[in-house]
Amino acid sequence: HRERQKKLLPLFSPELRPTRMAFAKGLWDIFLVFTVVFWISISFLYGAGYDTMRHIKDATLIFRNFDDSPAATNLSSMIVTAFEDPAVPLLKDYTGSSRYDSVSAIKDAVWKGDAWGAVIVNNGFGTNLDRALTEGAVYNATSAVTLVTEESRHYFKVMMVNKAAAGALTGLEGAFAEQTFARLLSADGASVASVIDQANAEALITPFSFATDNVAPYHFDMSMYILSVTLSLCMVVGSFIPSNMWKSIEEPFFKQVRVTQVIALRAFINIVWAIFICVQATGIVFAFHGPSWSPSVGDFFAIFAIFLLNTLAFTFFIDCMQNWVHPRFLLGGYFTTLFVNIAAAMFGAELNNHFFRICYAMPFHSSGLMLRTLLTDGSYNKLDFAITINILWSVFWWLVSSFLIARKARLVRDGKIMMSNVPPPPGHAQPAEATATAEKEPESPATQISSSESEFLSSSTASSASETDISTHMAGTRARKSSEMSDIEIEDA
Image (cartoon, rainbow, N blue to C red):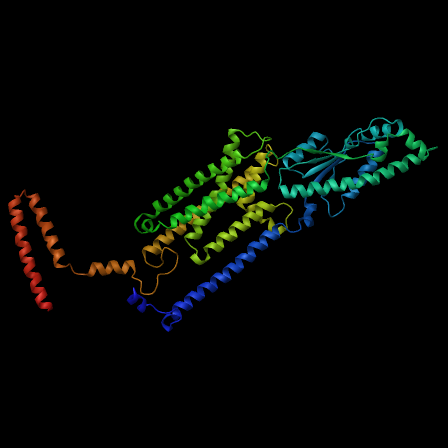
């Protein structure tokens, strides 16, 4: 051991200077790459969710007044004015239009995703209010206006839009109460005391309020964040693990098996592993669902298919990186991919800055879209779009990975790169050259002996020679070749 230690060099010895420089260059490359990756990832994550209120006017609400009373007309005017505020969604007034001419038509439009919600002044509002103010009749202020909402779009953006719309309507309650009281006092012979005596107190204090009608409730007791985490786990476990496992055993296949079979085998392993992981992830979702959701067998297979498409899209992308990217930069690619798609899942694409609406093309966003449609009984149905996006990504990256596998196999067999996607070190024997050298080397005497024996055995067997003759011939051949070897050794000496 001491003798071996004496032969080892100190870290800062002059002989190791090239090695130290190469090591320092590698560290510098990693530092630069991960600095860029970190800022790209964090910028995308924060940018996708930054100040979405700036684009809240991209969220459209349907407005319709179904009551032609003076009170309803006055309230409609106040609502339209209030929604001109830049901090609330865009309100489109369809009063008097042939479009959305019924409450059911408006709710259906919200359920389909044609609008983010709707504000409806209900028929009979003015009549009921006048009776409550002049006759003291029973009055329910929340029957005046209906705020139609849904939860099938991105949960974070839906919450923001619904909250802004509800806040705008709530802010009108006091102002409308003041106007109503002033209108009653303006009548002939009216006084404060007479108005108070004859009016329903609740109607006088709150002449209008609103009720919320959620036409697409989210039928799952866990937040969509939980499902986003599940998608992330499927991506990491379903794509990174088989890719890294394959990388540790791929060398014999690349050097000895046909490329088409290598491509097919790798795709088979990826698909089987993805199915295995996604079945378990779907089982976890079913095991931890709450009592308000009663899933069916069809729901199980639908969620499984969503997880599988999402996982395959990433699996073949990771394959591409492992067959092309330098090992120093692999983790940077993984990190960026994960963060960009998590940002798409957490913040969605709706109401983002226009640049960050590229999230529409991310597999995570499409998978989340499909899950929300499934868990809201088919509301905001964009399944065709979402499924197409994930299938296109999966097929595209599989085709690219197939090309890169074929390219890598050719380069590895030619000795131009190693299995780690880096060039071979200087002086490394090239497989093609080694083969040519082996072909030029003369056969050794021992090899010649074996060859002679083999040839004689073949010819003897074909001519049905006796075993005795074969043994005699082999013995003579060995003696003759031994004599030749002795002569060669004497000459070499």
